[in-house]
Length: 357
Image 1: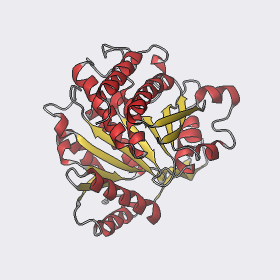
Image 2: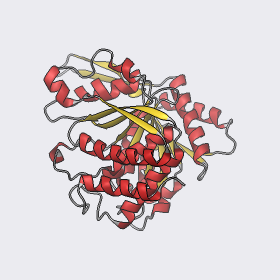
Image 3: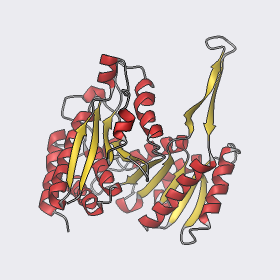
């Protein structure tokens, strides 16, 4: 029997509520698949920061490095200035644990309402591979003469050959493993960002020579946003930098039905990875048992896939599809026809009834 140690950071707002349902489903699939999941909880987040003034305590990163994976609820607190928790916890974890890939599946499930007219589940099924530790998020730059009419603010995008190549190489390998359209699209802005995306484009074409079975193409980021809405079926796997990836994946979440179904992974293929619903802490719904936990449940499935438990991950996805196609009226908070805990019960029930093939 395989055993995995999982660090759980429920976080803020509705984070603990959706993580509770995710763990309910993970426990169900573990019992079906003969694996053991050992959950260890950490209180990192806004409440701890308000109480102690610290984001991550000394030694936290090294302790988390010992786990097989991290399962995160949400970070964001109404009493904490924006940027403090994001930089102090989320970016610190991504950077210090070298989670250099942000993996975002964009998949429309049966029964989920799509805002794009006449688009069906077979039309929206692609993955964005976003570089996760460089670019504008590296924090390079500064401010001169702050608060004066002569103020200058500089934010620099850092792109290294190593960082770009390992992201692109991961994308090619993922596209090969996915084996759908076998098509990889580079998303950039080569006509304006001529230094950074010259590096991206040259590296993309150099690595592409090692993967003759993968079709390649390029699209400016503004064109990608248009085609997401007009022709999402064109896409299979997309690779892009940190900032553009952050933007286009939120658009992707909307066309797959909203933040309630969107899950993401912060991946270090050689180390510990972190999985989360991408919708945020939604503080206005805290404690009301109304928010949709499916994104957290899908994040749990992504975690199992990364751990190599593919059959268990597929079982969770099938159970989610059963819920969306037959039971949930909507994915919106308070409009599902079920409460948060009831959705978790529903998915766990399907997992138990179906079992591993």
